[in-house]
Structures are given as structure tokens and as C-alpha cells.
Length: 68
Image (cartoon, rainbow, N blue to C red; front, side):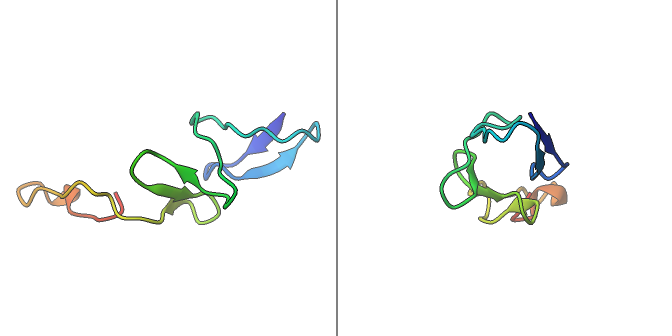
């Protein structure tokens, strides 16, 4: 059993066994990143490290952030 913080970073492993799948169901790769189909998430900084390939809508400014 692990204690995971809000950024999906393991803070404590209670049984000494590493689990490769976390609560999101995504597998951590050898680089320590999670792949979500079109972009990578870095749990150490708590954000995606690549842009979302879907472009935003100018009529909805909240969709224009490249790291939504």
C-alpha cells in the first residue's frame, strides 16, 4: 500500500512493493512519466509536459491554454 499525494507522487510505500498502475489506471514508464494517449504527465511537477494537440476555441477563452 502506498500513500500518494494530490500530484500522484508516491510519498510512502508501506509494504515495499512498487505498483506500476496508480489511481488513474495509467502505467508509469521508465522515465517516470505517465502517458495519457496524446500527452505526457510528470507527477514530480504536477502537470503535463507536452501541449494538448486539440486547439482551443476563440469563443471559449478557457480552452486556449496549451497545457489545459
